[in-house]
Image 1 (cartoon, one colour):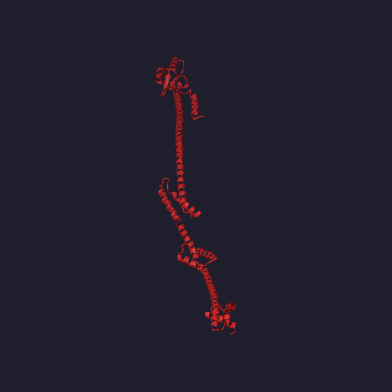
Image 2: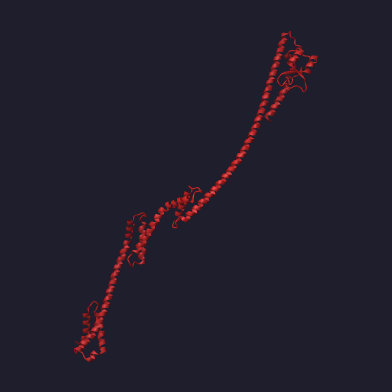
Length: 401
C-alpha cells in the first residue's frame, strides 16, 4: 500500500469519528446558508451556543472554503420553528455560566484539535502529493537521464567503433610501412652477414622504424636506416676486413715457402699460421701478427732449408758424378784414339811391321784392352796425359817391351 493511500484512509477514519462533533467543511449541494453572525441576530443565541449546537448536531451548518462558519437556512428555520429544542441556558446562574464556559472551551479545544488534525492531514496530503510529484519528477529526470545516458552510450559506442576503425587502419598502415622497410633491409644488408647479425640488424631497424609515422618520407626513412645499418655493421666490417687480411696472410705464408715445398709442408704452414693468428687479437697491430706468423713458420722454414741444402748437396754430387763419368768417357775415347796414334808412331819408326799396323783385329784387341784398363783405373778426374799413358802401356805390354 502506498503512502498516499494510507494517508487517505487515515483521514477518512478521523473524519468519520469527528463527523458528529465538528463542523463540516463543505456546503450541501444546493443548500442556502447565512453567516453565524446572522444566525445569532435572528435567534438571539450567542455564537458559542450556536457552535455547541452545531457540534452536537442540533443545527445544520458548515465551513466555507475560507474557513467561516455558515448556518443553513433550513436548519435555521427549523430552529426558529421550535423543531430543534436547544437546551436553555440560564444566564442568571453562575454555575451554568461556568458550565457553558467549560463546554464552550471544550468545543473550542475540540475544534482546535480537529483543525490541527485536519491541518496535519492536509500537510500529510501535501507531503504525499509533494512526494508523488517529486517521485514523478524524479522518474521523469531518471527517464531523461536514462535517455541521455543511452544517447551517450550510443555516441560512445560509435566513437569507440570509429576509434577502433582508425586504430585498425593505423595498425594496418604501420604494418605495411614496417613490412616494406623490413623487406628493403633484408635486400640491402650484405650477403656475408651471419643469421645472428642479420637478426640484430633487423631488430635495430624495427626499433628505428618506431620513431617514424607511416606518412614519413622515404628519403628520411632510408637515410636513417642506412645510418643504422652502417653503425651496427661497422665493427663487423672491420672484423671481416681483418679476417680477410689474415686469410691473405695465410695465403702469402704458403706462397712464400721455398721452391719445392711439399703439399704436406704447405698444409702444415697454413694450419700453423691460422693457429698463430687465432691467438692474436683482431685489433692487434701488424707487427704483432707478423711476429706470430714468423714464429709459427720458423720450424717449417728451417726444415725446408735443411732439406734444400741436402738436396743441393745431392744434386751437386750427382752433377759431379755425371761430370766425372763424362770426363771418364772422354778420357777413354782419348785413350782409344791414342792407340791408333801410337801404332802409327811405331810403324813410322819401324817398330812394328806393315802387316801388324794394318791388322784390324789386333788393333781392336788393343783398344778393348785399353778401354778395360782405363775404365778400371780412371775415375774421371785424370788428364789427357793419363789416358795417353794407359794407352801406350797397353800397346807396350802387348809388344812385350
